[in-house]
Structures are given as structure tokens and as C-alpha cells.
Amino acid sequence: MKTHHTLVIFSCALVLLLQGCALSSHPLGNPALGKASSSAEMERLIDQPGPIQMETVISADWTVSLAGLLNLESPAATQAGLKDRDEPIHIYAHLLKHPQRGNFIVDTGLSQKLLDDPGKEGVNWLVQKVMHVEKIKLRKSTAEMQQGMGGKLSGVFFTHLHPDHILGMPDIANDVPLYIGATESSGTSFKNMFVRGLTDQLLKDKQPLQEWHFQPDPQNKFEGIVDVFEDGSMFAISVPGHSPGSTAFLIRTTNGSVLLTGDACITRWGWEHTVEPGDFTADHERNLKNLKSMKELVARHPQIEVRLGHQH
Ligand SMILES: [Zn+2]
Image (cartoon, rainbow, N blue to C red; front, side):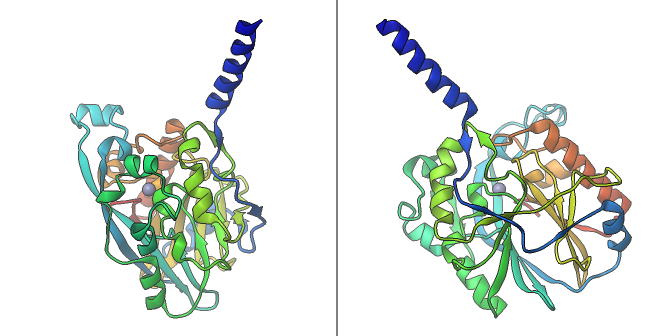
């Protein structure tokens, strides 16, 4: 009888472990911005400059294991003899100014508060150890960036919600709207158990997470495209794989179109050799397919400037 009980408990624990949990229990909301669009509509406008002023800021320098940034088991990486090593990368935030809609940022950079007291902001010892927080060097905090922008933030657009993209949240006001890809926070994974506490803490008291309403792309070039401001100036592109709701952005700036890949492609080597990220990637096959779709987009429109997840 006792053995039976132990077996039941063990099986339940195993199921829980395998199914994992959602990344966050933070509430979801309906998007106040955006309407479903198509790759045809986006590509009709893509070669013309737009109204958005954009600045990409290196918020911090960081060194991480290459195995996290690139799938070292991919044929291209094996062939090139790439081995795991420490790789220098940046943590970015992208500042956007829309002439009518106001100031927005894509991803959040890094808050000084988080370095001053990681424990208080929810960065437990395990996350600190895995992320090597001690190797993060702040250049410009999220608070400083906002001061430079002048005027309040009207929203934060996330490429995804992995910890290194929400480290600026302590500097984001509680009333700022937040936008994510579909199922980004609710998709379950075993690995989420380690970062769920941190994610929930950084989102605590913030606005609900508004999921983009992606619809299938009529031209079938992407999984879904949303016209963010409904004026063709910026498009959110659904590129899941690295995470369940990974989102890229095509921004028609005053200097031409810029593609933010998010961590659907993290490194320059990965972009040039069409290799998806490594550890912490939820679905490699889907990530690779979406990386190829983005490269094909840029091949059709070579004037697009590509800005990758963590490297120039
Ligand atoms: Zn990242």
C-alpha cells in the first residue's frame, strides 16, 4: 500500500515536472493597439521611409555561453567547428517616437535598481548563478533612457519575456501598457519553473499583458502580422520558436525600414549562417523556419536594416 502511494505521488510529480508551468501568472488583456495585416500590405510599404524616429540603445554589456546564443549542434556550427565559449553580447532597448502616438520602447534594457538589489527585484540566487548577473555591466539604465526621450512612455512592446528582456521593468511606470506575442506568458514549459518567480515579481503591479491578435498571413510568408498603429508605420510579426510568443518588429523609420528580430536570431553569426539560438529555445524547428522567413524578407528588400537580439 505504502509503495503504491509513493508511486502515485512520484507519478504526479513527474507529470508536473514534464508539463511544466506557465512563464507568468500575470493577467492578460485585450490589445488596445493593432489590427491584423498581411505580408503583402507590409511589403507594399517596406521600401519607403516612415514617420517613426528610432534609436537603439546598448543598455548593458554582458558575457554569456555561446551554447545559449547559437545551436552548436546545427550542421553549419558543427562544420565551422564552433565550440562553446564565453561570448560578449549587448542588452538593448529600442526607443521609438511616433509623431502622433507618442513614445514607445521595444524591450526594456536594464534598471540600476536590479543591480543594486537583485534579491529585492526577484532575482533569486539560482537565476543569478545561471544568468551570471555579476557579468552584466550597465551602460545606460532604463530610467535614464526615458529621461532622454522626453515625455511619458505610451507602451512597451516585448520581443519576448525572457528575463534579459524585462530587466528594465523596475523603471517602467505601473500605468504603461505592455504588449506581447500570443501565448508568450501562458505557454507551459519545464524551464519556466526557474524563472516564473522572477517574471512575476518584475511584472508585479504593472499593467496586464496585451497579446497581439495575429491572424494567418494571406500570403503565407509569416505566421501572422499586425499593423501596430494602423497606419503602416510599424508591424509586429509573429515568429515563435525561441519562445511561444516570440515577436519581430518591422519599423518604418525616418531613415528607412528596420527589422528587429528579437531572439529569433541573437548573433551575427547566426544570421549570416541561418542558425537559430541554442539553449533556452523552446522549438528549434519552428524558430529556424521563422528565421528563414525573415531572411527571405530581407533578401526581397535588401534596404532593410537588421538589428539582432543581442549583437550588431
Ligand atoms: Zn535575450
